[in-house]
Amino acid sequence: MENKRRVGIMGGTFNPIHYGHLHLAQEAQKQILLDKVLFMPSGNSYMKKNVLDTKKRVEMTALAIKHYSRFELSLIEAQKTGNTYTCETLQYLTRINPNTQYYFIIGADSLFQIEQWKSPEQIFQFAILICAIRDDYDFDAIREKGDILAEFGADIIYLNTPKWDISSTDIRAKVRSGISIHGLVPLEVAHYIEQEHLYYEED
Image (cartoon, rainbow, N blue to C red):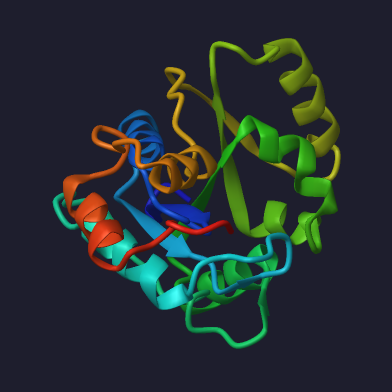
C-alpha cells in the first residue's frame, strides 16, 4: 500500500455545500496527507428525499472547491441513474484505479448509522474510514462503536476537528427567513443561491 495514491472522498447531498464540508476535507487532507479529495455530490439518494436538483448541487460544489488545488469534483454518483450506493461507488473506483487507496470521510454521526447503509462490509473492504470527532461527542462511545465495526473489517482513522456549527438545514432555513448566510458558504455559492432563487420556499 506504500506506493498507492491516497485519495479522500467527501460524499453528500451538498444541499448546499458549506464551509463545514470544506474545512473537514482540508483537515483530512492535511492530517492524513491525502494526495487529493474528491467531492462527490449524490445523485438520487435513497436515504434523503426532497433534495434539490442534482445539476444545481453539482454547480454549487464546483464553485465552492475551485480555489482549492487538492480538491476535485467527481460526478460518478451525480450522473448515475437510479439510487446511488457508497459500496458500489467504492467498488467501481477501486476496480478502475487499483493503485489508489481510498479514504471515505464521514462525521461521527455517520459512524453510528453506517450499519444501516447498503453492504457496509463492502465499504470497509474498499476504503479506510476517516471519522471526524468533534469536541461535543463522547469519544469513548465512538471508539466503542468503532471497535464493533472493526470486527466486520472496518479500518478507522479518528480525526480531531474543531466544532463547526454549520449545517445545510440551517442554511436553507436562514435563506427562507431572509437571514444572511455570509461566512457559512463561499461567496460564489451565496451568489448562486441568490441568483437561482434557491431555498426560498419550504423543502
